Image (cartoon, rainbow, N blue to C red; front, top):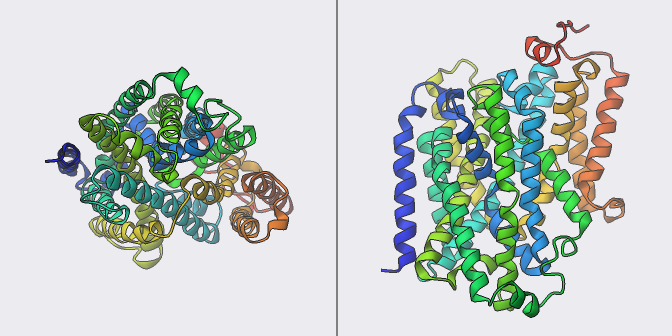
Length: 478
């Protein structure tokens, strides 16, 4: 039997065993399934954020970019790490203090139902776009690992079975505990692969001589400084406001655990993108005529068969760990903010849990459909993630300057972010800035501050924000 089949088969068995083991922790209250009962420790927070960030885009996507632009593509994952550190140093503690379940819940608490509604739609769409990338990467990994069994499409289908199955069984407990294995496996596999790949290519000096691109080993000039800055801005924005990331911090046992987990996780992420990028660079030298998306799987498959099996299983683990968090948080947005709020407000906790699990299944299948039509992993992500700017503006103002926030500001800020993205994608004449993220920050910030200055209905500063701000509760004037 093919060694790769054995390795992947064992990996699938182990993650399902872990999921069944954690199922009892997820039983009972819906909070146990959705937020791990708010009992995640610092190591579990750390591996959860690393697992979410270092997924298909940070491995397959980075190698795809590096195949064309050189090792500087590794800045994408470093930008994720910087974003996680900023999250840990700033709002992770404040979010945990609010004792909320979702970002739209915060919007309704401090703003209005319109803000909550448009927030739900935007958050779900963005997360499904991000998750679809994991299907694309997962299909590519399995088709490279076992070409006699999987095509990219059937690889996506197998990935869907695992993503949905693991999430259905144990929820956040399942996602976080399996990440202990996933993160260890993918870091060890990628590091071993790069050592062997460099040796196979004749060492770094020989790689430099044979590279088809002059900037292949330049840490800046390949993608360029503006792209690097843009990635950092986008991913700081995302870490401040994307539901799947916030949900990890909300699952922490206390505010200090949330803060430490994100900071340590961010530090762990900083170097790994450059390792994946180096594999993409070596692939461009050895396999100059293959698809850029296939660069990393093809490079790894040229190594020792058992190591190739372990490493590609590790990359698939990166997909699993990322997709499970995204799928759970998307399902939570539906069950908590749509079904429980508008369809069946009086449903029991057991019914709430059943609805969440049903949403995991249905949204997982819907995302699989998206994945079949998407190409260009990182470029697709960057456009979709820019929608998070409005949520970041709202969150920063709400958590740090609530006295200057108007109840009308949130809805129009989120609506503005949608309009800006649509115009940017359909009207080339408006693209006067290097990337849509800069237009989003400037315009969304101006809209939020402008409406707050003109409209005089301040948000209600409840006890949660009062603790954060160390100020007295001020009732709103209606």
